[in-house]
Length: 221
Length: 362
Image 1 (cartoon, each protein chain N blue to C red):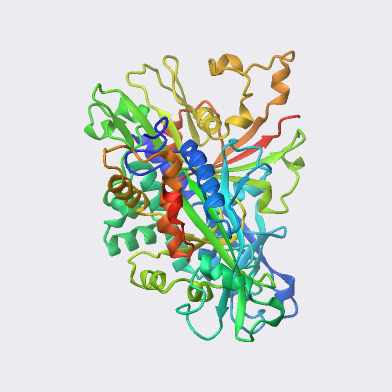
Image 2: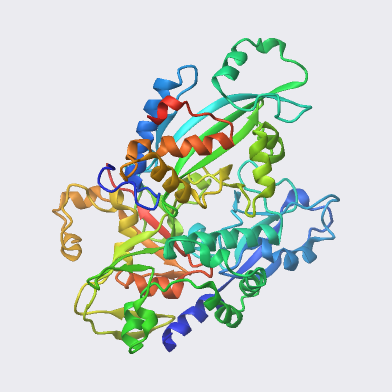
Protein backbone atom coordinates (compact mmCIF):
# COMPACT_ATOMS: atom_id res chain seq x y z
CA UNK A 1 0.00 0.00 0.00
CA UNK A 2 1.27 3.48 -0.60
CA UNK A 3 2.13 5.60 2.36
CA UNK A 4 0.01 8.59 3.22
CA UNK A 5 -1.61 8.92 -0.20
CA UNK A 6 1.58 9.85 -1.97
CA UNK A 7 0.85 7.83 -5.07
CA UNK A 8 -2.53 8.87 -6.29
CA UNK A 9 -5.13 6.67 -7.86
CA UNK A 10 -4.71 8.18 -11.27
CA UNK A 11 -0.99 7.46 -11.57
CA UNK A 12 0.19 10.85 -10.38
CA UNK A 13 2.46 11.43 -7.42
CA UNK A 14 2.85 14.17 -4.85
CA UNK A 15 6.08 16.03 -4.20
CA UNK A 16 6.50 14.19 -0.93
CA UNK A 17 5.93 10.90 -2.71
CA UNK A 18 8.45 11.84 -5.37
CA UNK A 19 11.07 12.50 -2.71
CA UNK A 20 10.55 9.08 -1.16
CA UNK A 21 10.42 7.36 -4.53
CA UNK A 22 13.54 9.12 -5.76
CA UNK A 23 15.64 8.05 -2.82
CA UNK A 24 14.39 4.49 -3.15
CA UNK A 25 15.19 4.54 -6.86
CA UNK A 26 18.71 5.85 -6.31
CA UNK A 27 19.36 3.23 -3.60
CA UNK A 28 18.13 0.33 -5.71
CA UNK A 29 20.08 1.54 -8.71
CA UNK A 30 23.25 1.63 -6.67
CA UNK A 31 22.66 -1.87 -5.40
CA UNK A 32 21.70 -3.53 -8.66
CA UNK A 33 23.68 -1.56 -11.19
CA UNK A 34 27.16 -1.97 -9.81
CA UNK A 35 29.05 -1.34 -13.02
CA UNK A 36 27.24 1.90 -13.54
CA UNK A 37 27.57 5.36 -12.07
CA UNK A 38 24.92 6.11 -9.48
CA UNK A 39 22.24 8.74 -9.39
CA UNK A 40 22.79 11.59 -7.01
CA UNK A 41 20.18 13.58 -5.18
CA UNK A 42 20.76 17.24 -5.87
CA UNK A 43 19.20 19.56 -3.35
CA UNK A 44 18.57 23.09 -4.41
CA UNK A 45 20.51 24.40 -1.46
CA UNK A 46 21.30 27.74 -2.98
CA UNK A 47 17.68 28.30 -3.54
CA UNK A 48 16.78 29.38 -0.07
CA UNK A 49 13.37 30.27 -1.31
CA UNK A 50 12.23 26.78 -2.08
CA UNK A 51 10.87 24.05 0.08
CA UNK A 52 13.51 21.80 1.57
CA UNK A 53 12.23 18.80 -0.35
CA UNK A 54 12.80 20.50 -3.66
CA UNK A 55 15.46 18.39 -5.32
CA UNK A 56 16.12 16.42 -8.42
CA UNK A 57 17.95 13.24 -9.36
CA UNK A 58 21.05 13.58 -11.46
CA UNK A 59 23.07 11.14 -13.51
CA UNK A 60 25.86 12.78 -15.37
CA UNK A 61 28.71 12.21 -17.76
CA UNK A 62 27.43 9.02 -19.27
CA UNK A 63 29.45 8.24 -22.34
CA UNK A 64 27.92 7.00 -25.52
CA UNK A 65 30.27 6.21 -28.32
CA UNK A 66 28.80 7.37 -31.52
CA UNK A 67 29.88 6.35 -34.94
CA UNK A 68 29.89 9.37 -37.15
CA UNK A 69 28.80 7.32 -40.12
CA UNK A 70 25.99 4.97 -39.32
CA UNK A 71 22.87 5.29 -37.24
CA UNK A 72 22.68 4.03 -33.69
CA UNK A 73 21.57 0.64 -34.96
CA UNK A 74 24.60 -1.52 -34.31
CA UNK A 75 26.64 0.95 -32.36
CA UNK A 76 26.17 2.07 -28.81
CA UNK A 77 22.42 1.94 -28.46
CA UNK A 78 22.40 2.55 -24.80
CA UNK A 79 24.29 2.06 -21.70
CA UNK A 80 23.57 -1.54 -20.82
CA UNK A 81 25.90 -3.64 -18.74
CA UNK A 82 27.35 -5.25 -21.86
CA UNK A 83 28.12 -1.95 -23.41
CA UNK A 84 29.73 -0.73 -20.26
CA UNK A 85 32.23 -3.54 -20.43
CA UNK A 86 32.98 -2.68 -24.00
CA UNK A 87 33.70 0.87 -22.97
CA UNK A 88 36.22 -0.29 -20.40
CA UNK A 89 38.19 -2.19 -22.99
CA UNK A 90 38.58 0.83 -25.17
CA UNK A 91 41.76 2.77 -24.95
CA UNK A 92 40.71 6.38 -25.07
CA UNK A 93 44.01 7.52 -26.40
CA UNK A 94 43.47 5.51 -29.51
CA UNK A 95 39.89 6.33 -30.37
CA UNK A 96 38.85 5.40 -33.83
CA UNK A 97 38.73 8.33 -36.18
CA UNK A 98 35.13 7.51 -36.98
CA UNK A 99 34.09 7.33 -33.34
CA UNK A 100 33.29 10.26 -31.17
CA UNK A 101 32.53 10.24 -27.46
CA UNK A 102 29.26 11.91 -26.60
CA UNK A 103 28.54 12.76 -23.00
CA UNK A 104 25.05 12.76 -21.57
CA UNK A 105 23.54 14.19 -18.43
CA UNK A 106 20.13 13.06 -17.17
CA UNK A 107 18.01 14.79 -14.59
CA UNK A 108 14.75 13.51 -13.14
CA UNK A 109 12.72 16.49 -12.02
CA UNK A 110 9.30 16.64 -10.42
CA UNK A 111 6.64 18.58 -12.28
CA UNK A 112 4.24 20.26 -9.89
CA UNK A 113 1.89 21.07 -12.76
CA UNK A 114 1.53 17.53 -14.10
CA UNK A 115 2.28 15.80 -10.79
CA UNK A 116 4.60 13.31 -12.43
CA UNK A 117 8.37 13.05 -12.84
CA UNK A 118 9.99 14.36 -15.99
CA UNK A 119 13.22 13.41 -17.65
CA UNK A 120 15.54 16.15 -18.81
CA UNK A 121 18.71 15.34 -20.65
CA UNK A 122 21.42 16.93 -22.70
CA UNK A 123 24.35 15.77 -24.74
CA UNK A 124 27.70 17.36 -25.34
CA UNK A 125 30.95 16.44 -27.02
CA UNK A 126 34.26 16.16 -25.27
CA UNK A 127 34.96 19.86 -25.78
CA UNK A 128 31.75 20.73 -23.97
CA UNK A 129 29.85 21.83 -27.06
CA UNK A 130 26.15 20.96 -26.83
CA UNK A 131 24.84 18.36 -29.25
CA UNK A 132 21.90 19.17 -31.48
CA UNK A 133 18.76 17.07 -31.46
CA UNK A 134 19.69 15.55 -34.81
CA UNK A 135 22.98 14.31 -33.43
CA UNK A 136 21.31 13.07 -30.24
CA UNK A 137 18.71 11.18 -32.27
CA UNK A 138 21.49 9.19 -33.83
CA UNK A 139 22.55 8.10 -30.36
CA UNK A 140 19.03 7.03 -29.39
CA UNK A 141 17.67 3.53 -29.89
CA UNK A 142 16.02 3.23 -33.29
CA UNK A 143 12.65 2.48 -31.69
CA UNK A 144 12.63 5.91 -30.05
CA UNK A 145 13.46 7.59 -33.28
CA UNK A 146 10.47 6.08 -35.05
CA UNK A 147 8.25 7.13 -32.14
CA UNK A 148 9.55 10.64 -32.59
CA UNK A 149 8.64 10.66 -36.22
CA UNK A 150 5.23 9.06 -35.85
CA UNK A 151 4.01 10.88 -32.77
CA UNK A 152 1.22 13.39 -33.17
CA UNK A 153 2.78 15.61 -30.55
CA UNK A 154 6.45 16.39 -30.36
CA UNK A 155 7.92 13.70 -28.22
CA UNK A 156 11.18 15.28 -27.23
CA UNK A 157 11.29 19.02 -26.91
CA UNK A 158 13.99 21.54 -26.23
CA UNK A 159 13.09 23.60 -23.21
CA UNK A 160 14.75 25.46 -20.46
CA UNK A 161 15.77 23.39 -17.48
CA UNK A 162 13.40 24.36 -14.66
CA UNK A 163 16.27 25.32 -12.37
CA UNK A 164 19.47 25.70 -14.32
CA UNK A 165 18.62 28.46 -16.81
CA UNK A 166 20.05 26.50 -19.71
CA UNK A 167 18.47 24.73 -22.70
CA UNK A 168 17.93 21.04 -22.11
CA UNK A 169 15.84 18.39 -23.81
CA UNK A 170 12.73 17.06 -22.16
CA UNK A 171 10.50 14.06 -22.67
CA UNK A 172 6.91 15.11 -23.11
CA UNK A 173 4.96 14.28 -19.96
CA UNK A 174 1.51 13.90 -21.44
CA UNK A 175 0.11 10.47 -20.77
CA UNK A 176 2.63 9.53 -18.10
CA UNK A 177 0.05 9.01 -15.41
CA UNK A 178 -2.01 6.77 -17.69
CA UNK A 179 0.62 4.18 -18.30
CA UNK A 180 1.84 4.36 -14.71
CA UNK A 181 -1.71 3.54 -13.75
CA UNK A 182 -1.68 0.62 -16.17
CA UNK A 183 1.61 -0.63 -14.76
CA UNK A 184 0.22 -0.33 -11.29
CA UNK A 185 -2.93 -2.25 -12.12
CA UNK A 186 -1.21 -5.02 -13.98
CA UNK A 187 1.45 -5.61 -11.39
CA UNK A 188 -0.74 -5.90 -8.33
CA UNK A 189 -3.04 -8.87 -8.08
CA UNK A 190 -4.90 -7.79 -4.99
CA UNK A 191 -5.77 -4.33 -6.24
CA UNK A 192 -3.26 -2.62 -4.00
CA UNK A 193 -1.88 0.77 -4.88
CA UNK A 194 1.66 0.75 -6.19
CA UNK A 195 4.05 1.26 -3.26
CA UNK A 196 5.60 4.67 -3.50
CA UNK A 197 9.12 3.19 -3.35
CA UNK A 198 8.56 1.53 -6.69
CA UNK A 199 7.00 4.49 -8.46
CA UNK A 200 10.16 5.90 -9.98
CA UNK A 201 11.57 2.47 -10.71
CA UNK A 202 8.49 1.62 -12.74
CA UNK A 203 8.48 5.01 -14.37
CA UNK A 204 12.11 4.80 -15.34
CA UNK A 205 11.82 1.25 -16.62
CA UNK A 206 9.72 2.74 -19.42
CA UNK A 207 11.14 6.23 -19.81
CA UNK A 208 14.77 5.20 -19.54
CA UNK A 209 14.41 2.95 -22.56
CA UNK A 210 13.67 5.95 -24.75
CA UNK A 211 17.11 7.33 -24.05
CA UNK A 212 18.74 3.93 -23.98
CA UNK A 213 19.11 3.48 -20.24
CA UNK A 214 18.09 0.03 -19.13
CA UNK A 215 16.60 -0.68 -15.73
CA UNK A 216 17.82 -3.97 -14.23
CA UNK A 217 14.90 -6.29 -13.52
CA UNK A 218 16.01 -6.82 -9.92
CA UNK A 219 15.11 -3.22 -9.20
CA UNK A 220 11.47 -3.87 -9.93
CA UNK A 221 11.01 -6.19 -6.99
CA UNK B 1 -18.67 38.70 -16.17
CA UNK B 2 -19.50 41.79 -14.16
CA UNK B 3 -18.83 45.13 -15.83
CA UNK B 4 -15.96 46.08 -13.56
CA UNK B 5 -14.21 42.80 -14.29
CA UNK B 6 -14.49 43.30 -18.01
CA UNK B 7 -12.85 46.64 -17.46
CA UNK B 8 -9.94 45.06 -15.62
CA UNK B 9 -9.33 42.52 -18.35
CA UNK B 10 -9.50 45.28 -20.95
CA UNK B 11 -6.82 47.24 -19.09
CA UNK B 12 -4.65 44.15 -18.99
CA UNK B 13 -4.95 43.61 -22.74
CA UNK B 14 -4.34 47.26 -23.50
CA UNK B 15 -1.33 47.50 -21.23
CA UNK B 16 1.81 48.35 -23.16
CA UNK B 17 5.37 49.35 -22.52
CA UNK B 18 7.22 51.95 -24.54
CA UNK B 19 10.49 50.50 -25.75
CA UNK B 20 13.54 52.25 -27.08
CA UNK B 21 15.52 49.65 -28.98
CA UNK B 22 19.15 50.11 -29.84
CA UNK B 23 21.09 48.07 -32.34
CA UNK B 24 24.07 46.47 -30.70
CA UNK B 25 27.12 48.49 -31.58
CA UNK B 26 29.03 45.48 -32.88
CA UNK B 27 26.39 45.11 -35.57
CA UNK B 28 26.26 48.67 -36.76
CA UNK B 29 27.64 48.64 -40.28
CA UNK B 30 26.60 52.10 -41.30
CA UNK B 31 27.80 55.58 -40.51
CA UNK B 32 26.28 57.45 -38.80
CA UNK B 33 24.77 54.71 -36.64
CA UNK B 34 21.00 54.40 -36.84
CA UNK B 35 18.85 56.05 -34.18
CA UNK B 36 16.99 53.73 -31.81
CA UNK B 37 13.63 52.29 -32.76
CA UNK B 38 10.64 53.39 -30.71
CA UNK B 39 8.04 50.71 -30.29
CA UNK B 40 5.03 50.24 -28.06
CA UNK B 41 5.10 46.66 -26.84
CA UNK B 42 1.94 44.94 -25.57
CA UNK B 43 2.41 43.62 -22.08
CA UNK B 44 0.81 40.30 -22.90
CA UNK B 45 2.92 39.91 -26.04
CA UNK B 46 6.43 38.66 -26.66
CA UNK B 47 9.50 40.54 -27.82
CA UNK B 48 10.26 38.53 -30.99
CA UNK B 49 6.80 39.41 -32.30
CA UNK B 50 7.94 43.01 -32.56
CA UNK B 51 10.79 42.29 -34.92
CA UNK B 52 8.81 43.23 -38.02
CA UNK B 53 8.29 46.67 -36.48
CA UNK B 54 11.91 47.07 -35.45
CA UNK B 55 13.86 45.67 -38.37
CA UNK B 56 12.99 48.45 -40.83
CA UNK B 57 14.83 50.89 -38.60
CA UNK B 58 18.05 48.92 -38.86
CA UNK B 59 18.05 46.96 -42.06
CA UNK B 60 20.36 49.34 -43.83
CA UNK B 61 22.85 49.13 -41.01
CA UNK B 62 23.09 45.40 -40.66
CA UNK B 63 26.08 43.42 -41.82
CA UNK B 64 25.31 40.77 -44.44
CA UNK B 65 24.21 37.33 -43.33
CA UNK B 66 21.33 35.51 -41.76
CA UNK B 67 19.41 36.87 -38.82
CA UNK B 68 19.20 35.20 -35.44
CA UNK B 69 17.48 37.76 -33.32
CA UNK B 70 17.72 38.25 -29.61
CA UNK B 71 17.39 41.06 -27.08
CA UNK B 72 19.30 42.09 -24.01
CA UNK B 73 18.72 44.50 -21.16
CA UNK B 74 21.96 45.89 -19.74
CA UNK B 75 23.78 42.84 -20.97
CA UNK B 76 21.28 40.29 -19.70
CA UNK B 77 19.94 38.15 -22.58
CA UNK B 78 16.16 38.24 -22.43
CA UNK B 79 14.12 35.05 -22.37
CA UNK B 80 11.84 35.48 -25.33
CA UNK B 81 9.09 33.20 -24.06
CA UNK B 82 8.37 35.34 -21.01
CA UNK B 83 5.67 37.94 -21.74
CA UNK B 84 7.12 41.41 -22.27
CA UNK B 85 5.22 42.93 -19.35
CA UNK B 86 6.59 40.32 -16.97
CA UNK B 87 10.16 40.95 -18.11
CA UNK B 88 9.68 44.65 -17.50
CA UNK B 89 8.13 44.24 -14.05
CA UNK B 90 10.85 41.86 -13.02
CA UNK B 91 13.97 43.48 -14.39
CA UNK B 92 13.12 47.12 -13.78
CA UNK B 93 12.58 47.57 -10.07
CA UNK B 94 12.21 51.25 -10.77
CA UNK B 95 10.18 51.35 -14.00
CA UNK B 96 12.20 52.80 -16.82
CA UNK B 97 10.22 54.65 -19.46
CA UNK B 98 11.00 54.22 -22.24
CA UNK B 99 12.59 50.87 -21.54
CA UNK B 100 15.98 50.76 -23.21
CA UNK B 101 16.74 47.43 -24.80
CA UNK B 102 19.41 46.25 -27.21
CA UNK B 103 18.62 44.12 -30.21
CA UNK B 104 21.05 41.70 -31.82
CA UNK B 105 20.75 40.11 -35.24
CA UNK B 106 23.80 37.90 -34.85
CA UNK B 107 25.55 35.79 -32.30
CA UNK B 108 22.57 34.09 -30.68
CA UNK B 109 23.62 32.89 -27.21
CA UNK B 110 22.38 29.34 -27.69
CA UNK B 111 24.20 28.12 -24.62
CA UNK B 112 21.83 30.16 -22.46
CA UNK B 113 18.73 30.84 -24.54
CA UNK B 114 16.56 28.20 -26.15
CA UNK B 115 16.29 28.81 -29.88
CA UNK B 116 13.58 30.99 -31.33
CA UNK B 117 12.53 30.33 -34.88
CA UNK B 118 10.16 33.23 -35.23
CA UNK B 119 6.43 33.19 -34.72
CA UNK B 120 6.15 29.40 -34.75
CA UNK B 121 8.33 29.03 -31.68
CA UNK B 122 6.32 31.61 -29.79
CA UNK B 123 3.02 30.07 -30.80
CA UNK B 124 4.24 26.64 -29.75
CA UNK B 125 5.32 28.03 -26.41
CA UNK B 126 1.94 29.70 -25.96
CA UNK B 127 -0.05 26.57 -26.77
CA UNK B 128 2.17 24.50 -24.52
CA UNK B 129 1.63 26.87 -21.63
CA UNK B 130 -2.09 26.78 -22.33
CA UNK B 131 -2.02 22.98 -22.15
CA UNK B 132 -0.12 23.05 -18.90
CA UNK B 133 -2.59 25.56 -17.45
CA UNK B 134 -5.46 23.39 -18.63
CA UNK B 135 -3.91 20.40 -16.95
CA UNK B 136 -3.66 22.31 -13.71
CA UNK B 137 -7.20 23.70 -13.82
CA UNK B 138 -9.12 20.85 -15.42
CA UNK B 139 -6.92 17.90 -14.46
CA UNK B 140 -6.18 17.10 -18.09
CA UNK B 141 -5.41 18.94 -21.31
CA UNK B 142 -8.12 17.36 -23.41
CA UNK B 143 -9.85 20.70 -23.87
CA UNK B 144 -6.86 22.11 -25.71
CA UNK B 145 -6.08 18.90 -27.59
CA UNK B 146 -9.66 18.75 -28.81
CA UNK B 147 -9.65 22.26 -30.18
CA UNK B 148 -9.63 22.34 -33.94
CA UNK B 149 -6.48 23.49 -35.64
CA UNK B 150 -8.21 26.57 -36.98
CA UNK B 151 -9.58 27.51 -33.55
CA UNK B 152 -6.10 27.23 -32.09
CA UNK B 153 -4.78 29.37 -34.91
CA UNK B 154 -7.48 31.98 -34.39
CA UNK B 155 -6.87 32.02 -30.66
CA UNK B 156 -3.17 32.57 -31.17
CA UNK B 157 -3.82 35.27 -33.75
CA UNK B 158 -6.11 37.11 -31.34
CA UNK B 159 -3.32 37.14 -28.75
CA UNK B 160 -0.71 38.19 -31.28
CA UNK B 161 -2.86 41.08 -32.40
CA UNK B 162 -4.02 42.01 -28.92
CA UNK B 163 -7.60 41.54 -30.10
CA UNK B 164 -9.57 41.04 -26.89
CA UNK B 165 -12.92 40.84 -28.68
CA UNK B 166 -11.77 37.98 -30.86
CA UNK B 167 -10.21 36.25 -27.86
CA UNK B 168 -13.39 36.62 -25.82
CA UNK B 169 -15.42 35.12 -28.65
CA UNK B 170 -13.06 32.18 -28.87
CA UNK B 171 -12.44 31.46 -25.20
CA UNK B 172 -15.62 29.39 -24.68
CA UNK B 173 -14.09 26.98 -27.19
CA UNK B 174 -11.15 26.43 -24.88
CA UNK B 175 -13.55 24.98 -22.33
CA UNK B 176 -11.41 25.94 -19.39
CA UNK B 177 -13.20 25.44 -16.12
CA UNK B 178 -13.86 28.51 -14.06
CA UNK B 179 -11.70 29.41 -11.15
CA UNK B 180 -14.44 30.27 -8.80
CA UNK B 181 -14.49 33.91 -8.03
CA UNK B 182 -16.31 34.70 -4.83
CA UNK B 183 -17.25 38.11 -6.06
CA UNK B 184 -18.70 37.17 -9.40
CA UNK B 185 -20.55 34.39 -7.66
CA UNK B 186 -22.15 36.96 -5.45
CA UNK B 187 -22.83 39.30 -8.34
CA UNK B 188 -24.30 36.82 -10.80
CA UNK B 189 -27.45 35.65 -9.09
CA UNK B 190 -27.89 31.98 -9.69
CA UNK B 191 -25.54 31.17 -12.48
CA UNK B 192 -24.90 27.44 -12.74
CA UNK B 193 -21.44 28.05 -14.18
CA UNK B 194 -20.18 29.60 -11.01
CA UNK B 195 -20.75 26.36 -9.18
CA UNK B 196 -18.37 24.48 -11.37
CA UNK B 197 -14.76 25.04 -11.07
CA UNK B 198 -11.27 23.83 -11.24
CA UNK B 199 -12.49 22.64 -7.88
CA UNK B 200 -13.83 19.31 -6.79
CA UNK B 201 -17.09 19.17 -5.01
CA UNK B 202 -17.60 16.21 -2.80
CA UNK B 203 -20.84 14.64 -1.75
CA UNK B 204 -21.51 17.03 1.10
CA UNK B 205 -21.35 20.01 -1.27
CA UNK B 206 -18.26 21.42 0.39
CA UNK B 207 -15.84 22.74 -2.18
CA UNK B 208 -12.44 21.12 -1.91
CA UNK B 209 -9.26 22.05 -3.68
CA UNK B 210 -8.68 24.47 -6.48
CA UNK B 211 -5.44 24.47 -8.47
CA UNK B 212 -4.43 27.70 -10.14
CA UNK B 213 -1.59 28.10 -12.67
CA UNK B 214 0.98 30.55 -11.36
CA UNK B 215 4.47 31.48 -12.51
CA UNK B 216 6.36 33.20 -9.76
CA UNK B 217 9.56 35.12 -10.46
CA UNK B 218 11.43 35.95 -7.28
CA UNK B 219 14.29 38.37 -6.94
CA UNK B 220 15.93 38.65 -3.61
CA UNK B 221 18.03 41.42 -2.19
CA UNK B 222 20.21 41.09 0.84
CA UNK B 223 19.99 44.64 2.06
CA UNK B 224 17.01 46.80 2.66
CA UNK B 225 16.43 49.73 0.36
CA UNK B 226 14.64 53.03 0.55
CA UNK B 227 13.95 53.58 -3.12
CA UNK B 228 13.45 51.14 -5.91
CA UNK B 229 16.23 52.74 -7.88
CA UNK B 230 18.62 51.50 -5.21
CA UNK B 231 17.86 47.90 -6.05
CA UNK B 232 20.98 46.46 -7.69
CA UNK B 233 20.81 45.33 -11.29
CA UNK B 234 20.57 41.74 -12.36
CA UNK B 235 23.59 40.19 -13.99
CA UNK B 236 22.35 36.68 -14.59
CA UNK B 237 19.12 34.75 -14.53
CA UNK B 238 20.56 32.68 -11.70
CA UNK B 239 19.61 35.56 -9.44
CA UNK B 240 15.95 34.84 -10.09
CA UNK B 241 14.17 31.93 -8.53
CA UNK B 242 11.54 30.84 -10.98
CA UNK B 243 8.69 28.79 -9.59
CA UNK B 244 6.33 27.22 -12.07
CA UNK B 245 4.01 25.71 -9.54
CA UNK B 246 0.25 25.80 -9.07
CA UNK B 247 -1.28 27.44 -6.04
CA UNK B 248 -3.60 25.09 -4.25
CA UNK B 249 -6.20 26.30 -1.89
CA UNK B 250 -9.30 25.17 -0.17
CA UNK B 251 -12.38 26.99 -1.13
CA UNK B 252 -14.85 27.47 1.65
CA UNK B 253 -18.54 27.53 1.15
CA UNK B 254 -20.77 30.18 2.53
CA UNK B 255 -18.39 32.99 3.41
CA UNK B 256 -20.22 36.14 4.14
CA UNK B 257 -18.72 39.36 3.10
CA UNK B 258 -19.44 42.84 2.13
CA UNK B 259 -17.79 44.37 -0.88
CA UNK B 260 -16.50 47.86 -0.68
CA UNK B 261 -15.55 49.22 -4.03
CA UNK B 262 -13.13 52.09 -4.09
CA UNK B 263 -11.93 53.54 -7.34
CA UNK B 264 -8.22 53.91 -7.20
CA UNK B 265 -6.59 54.81 -10.51
CA UNK B 266 -6.67 51.57 -12.39
CA UNK B 267 -7.37 48.96 -9.79
CA UNK B 268 -10.54 48.22 -7.92
CA UNK B 269 -9.78 47.35 -4.36
CA UNK B 270 -12.10 44.97 -2.69
CA UNK B 271 -12.20 44.52 1.02
CA UNK B 272 -14.24 42.20 3.04
CA UNK B 273 -15.41 42.45 6.57
CA UNK B 274 -16.75 39.05 7.42
CA UNK B 275 -15.50 35.60 6.81
CA UNK B 276 -12.06 34.45 5.71
CA UNK B 277 -10.77 34.78 2.21
CA UNK B 278 -7.78 33.31 0.47
CA UNK B 279 -5.71 36.36 -0.33
CA UNK B 280 -2.83 37.07 -2.69
CA UNK B 281 -0.55 37.02 0.32
CA UNK B 282 -1.80 33.57 1.24
CA UNK B 283 -1.11 32.40 -2.28
CA UNK B 284 2.44 33.72 -2.40
CA UNK B 285 3.26 32.43 1.03
CA UNK B 286 1.99 29.00 0.09
CA UNK B 287 4.61 28.96 -2.66
CA UNK B 288 7.40 30.32 -0.46
CA UNK B 289 6.72 28.80 2.93
CA UNK B 290 10.27 28.28 4.14
CA UNK B 291 11.18 31.75 3.34
CA UNK B 292 8.35 33.90 4.46
CA UNK B 293 7.15 32.11 7.50
CA UNK B 294 9.39 31.18 10.36
CA UNK B 295 9.08 27.44 10.59
CA UNK B 296 9.15 27.48 14.37
CA UNK B 297 5.94 29.41 14.50
CA UNK B 298 2.68 27.61 14.47
CA UNK B 299 0.32 28.55 11.72
CA UNK B 300 -1.92 30.79 13.71
CA UNK B 301 -4.17 33.57 12.55
CA UNK B 302 -2.18 35.23 9.82
CA UNK B 303 -3.24 38.72 10.74
CA UNK B 304 -2.08 38.57 14.30
CA UNK B 305 1.25 36.90 13.56
CA UNK B 306 2.43 39.48 11.18
CA UNK B 307 3.01 42.25 13.65
CA UNK B 308 5.72 44.82 13.51
CA UNK B 309 6.61 44.26 17.10
CA UNK B 310 10.24 45.30 17.41
CA UNK B 311 10.81 42.96 20.30
CA UNK B 312 9.82 39.99 18.21
CA UNK B 313 13.21 38.52 17.32
CA UNK B 314 11.84 36.05 14.82
CA UNK B 315 10.57 38.94 12.73
CA UNK B 316 14.11 39.83 11.78
CA UNK B 317 15.06 36.32 10.85
CA UNK B 318 12.21 36.05 8.44
CA UNK B 319 12.33 37.24 4.89
CA UNK B 320 10.12 40.02 3.78
CA UNK B 321 7.95 40.55 0.76
CA UNK B 322 8.98 43.97 -0.47
CA UNK B 323 7.09 44.21 -3.71
CA UNK B 324 4.61 42.16 -5.66
CA UNK B 325 3.86 43.18 -9.23
CA UNK B 326 1.27 41.73 -11.55
CA UNK B 327 0.58 43.31 -14.94
CA UNK B 328 2.60 46.30 -13.82
CA UNK B 329 0.42 46.89 -10.80
CA UNK B 330 1.93 46.95 -7.34
CA UNK B 331 -0.48 44.71 -5.55
CA UNK B 332 -2.08 45.07 -2.19
CA UNK B 333 -1.60 41.66 -0.73
CA UNK B 334 -4.94 41.43 0.99
CA UNK B 335 -6.85 41.27 -2.26
CA UNK B 336 -8.74 37.99 -2.73
CA UNK B 337 -6.62 35.69 -4.80
CA UNK B 338 -9.48 34.49 -6.95
CA UNK B 339 -10.15 38.02 -8.13
CA UNK B 340 -6.48 38.51 -8.97
CA UNK B 341 -6.39 35.33 -11.01
CA UNK B 342 -9.57 35.92 -12.95
CA UNK B 343 -8.74 39.48 -13.85
CA UNK B 344 -5.00 39.68 -14.15
CA UNK B 345 -4.00 36.39 -15.73
CA UNK B 346 -2.40 36.21 -19.15
CA UNK B 347 -4.24 34.79 -22.19
CA UNK B 348 -2.69 31.35 -21.66
CA UNK B 349 -4.41 31.27 -18.26
CA UNK B 350 -1.24 31.71 -16.28
CA UNK B 351 -0.88 34.33 -13.56
CA UNK B 352 2.64 35.77 -13.74
CA UNK B 353 3.80 37.29 -10.48
CA UNK B 354 7.04 39.23 -10.01
CA UNK B 355 8.19 39.37 -6.44
CA UNK B 356 10.99 41.27 -4.78
CA UNK B 357 11.97 39.90 -1.40
CA UNK B 358 14.46 40.82 1.21
CA UNK B 359 16.46 37.84 2.38
CA UNK B 360 16.13 36.75 5.96
CA UNK B 361 19.02 37.75 8.19
CA UNK B 362 20.94 34.71 9.26
